[in-house]
Length: 91
Image (cartoon, rainbow, N blue to C red; front, side, top):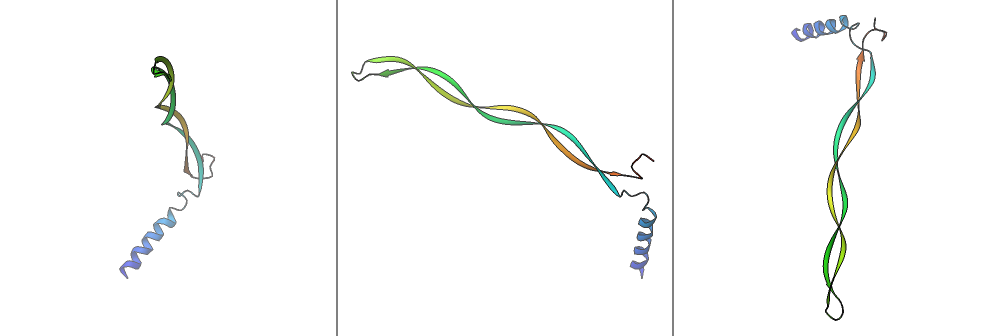
């Protein structure tokens, strides 16, 4: 019996507050700045010593690549649904 009285009181409270509760939701899109790291290949040259078929040394340049992480910022949409109270016209 005690649970029934509490349940009735709670239902009455929510029924009375029905005009205050939101029945519609509005989609609001905001944007957040996010930093992401991307790996890039950067070329560089090195002078090395090589040997020909007669074992004579000669110098030449060789292109090598190193991998570097570069920060990239981008805008990411964030979607929120906010409650609309009343008729949605501000009244």
